[in-house]
View 1 (tube, rainbow, N blue to C red):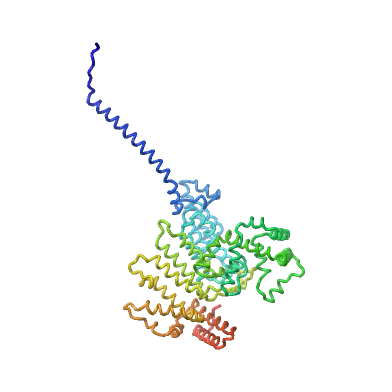
View 2 (view 1 turned 30 degrees about the horizontal axis):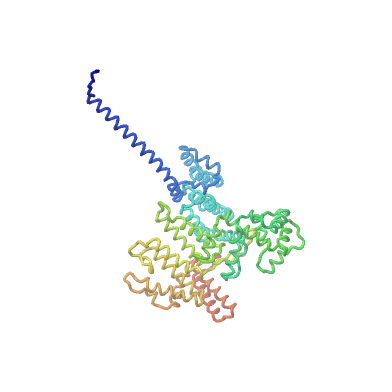
Length: 560
């Protein structure tokens, strides 16, 4: 019988084997945890990607479908991209200083392509075009072109890559509101003439009637037109025949057709225009196209074609959302005249405020400044939102554009002030939903605007307007006291004395004085047309009184 060998493993070998078993256990546990982590990460990728797209942390493939090859190529430069950005930025500034504006424009676009997801470079390039380069030009045509270059860069390209950048929307709104709507640029009138004429060409002649139903019906023809232009043409035999006839004459379904319609086929029944527009012996292809467009049997197809074409251009070239435009009209602010720069400023500031909601890392200043542009735009519509335009489509800068007050926007402006105040300060312990938040520049600005609204409502007259003016005046009486709580003396008089007592102060600036005089004149003409001679005389007398104040100490009138 073999002898059994008894052997005891040395302690150091026992320790080594124990360590190996421990290491194996650790490795197995780590492998299991790694597998679980990889699987978990895979499951979380979808919601994480959704969050990244929602908060605009990556380029959304759907947003930038068909990314231009030059942007895709420039994005692959890696580390050298930063050097290319620095070089292009410095070179663009030097070219701008040398007056080589178009070369500077191309370099600015290159910088934007090198970092398309960095909103500030788009905004900087746009500002350079609309403000710095534009003022270096010597003609209204050149200035207008560069102001629009800045807007188009953001509107057509910047938003595509930064759809939730509130700063881009804010800057578009600011350019419309400040550069075109305000008085600080020497060519501000030229900008407004060009904008009004362009919008009249694209949208068609705006209704002469001030009735909201007429205006809304006119606008809804464009809103409700087919959105797929090619499918619309393919399914409408009459439109196909019309387009075939026009194409034979060299006229295509584009802005050229709208230009012919705008110049040659106007709905206003003005005798001189009708004589000029008459075509008895057509000499050119355009004359023949006008005859085709005027044929009685073509009118149904012409109307359908123009509505669909206007819809296409508004959506694809102006990049305006027709559904949002209708929403702003019917649910938020009222009927806007898109020939006014304030209407466009309101659209883009409202959209910026909407797109910024829920955005990660958005500064309070950006939110507040965008909100301010909403009610500043509304206030612009209040003071100069009603547009009278006699367009010259051959020379847009010779068009006649007149802007007068439109008190219909006052309730919307009032509500917008309170709405955005609540958004900003509803968590503040001093917030009061009825009185707002006192002691802030926001509240002080609100009070200043209310004074202006009361005056315009008073000047406009009418039972409804005077009732609203009294309501706002009573609110100020109760909610805008002295710091010690006592009622301010200006609110202790009647509405008549309150308005007329401050008229001298209001007449000291062009921005406020001219709308006041125009409001009295317009009111007087309205009363006169209705046979209300006493009321008309009262309005004209006040207009004359205001004009006298405007001309005090004026030897010669330098005003346009």
